[in-house]
Image (cartoon, rainbow, N blue to C red; front, side, top):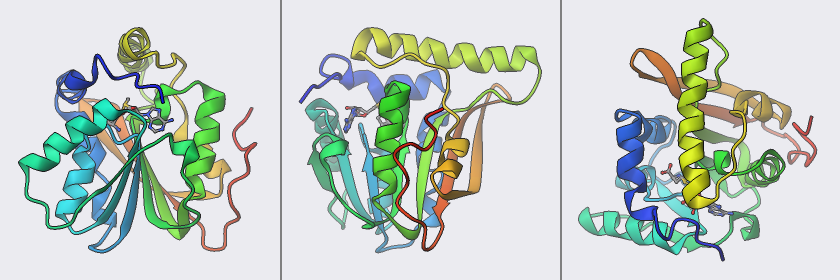
Length: 228
Ligand SMILES: C[S@@+](CC[C@H](N)C(=O)[O-])C[C@H]1O[C@@H](n2cnc3c(N)ncnc32)[C@H](O)[C@@H]1O
């Protein structure tokens, strides 16, 4: 399995926090209040696991998946620094090889889907939706889609994303693409947008966490949703 974060993994979380003036860590835990102790949470592309540790601390049953051994090594270091009563199930695998039909109350993808080109992102998002119980939620934390404010505001949001994308394209081989419209995509996959939390940087919405609720009785998302 390819480990794109072998060289740069050590600094990932620190740099992200710095680049967002502390907003990325807040974005990752923004929707944990929608879970209660004992609920089942899967985190895809977990990285260093800020939200995984916080969720486990709250008594949530956490499964964390990442393709990178390096990232999981740093997550383990984080776990070792705190005392968790509840162990986190850590899986080193490609998320597309995981199969958990309707197993989770919440599936979380923080700054994960943006590493992929559109077609692969859609395949992965569609796959993740199958893990969610009917009535459960999918949460996506990421860079905000520039769709409000004046020209300067949107230009800043766009440049802010492309700067980060270019750095990780050069160092981790991530894709460069326009910011994805996750609320629209989740809507097209049978999820109702229940909540969006905006995280401000310098007074501007630069990060957001989106909670989509799987309608009870919804069919598994279609593989062609959003492919336009
Ligand atoms: C941009 S980082 C985000 C990490 C973390 N979610 C965060 O917000 O700090 C993307 C993560 O997804 C992982 N990843 C990439 N492709 C993956 C795949 N196919 N299956 C599972 N994890 C993957 C990477 O190893 C990396 O840890």
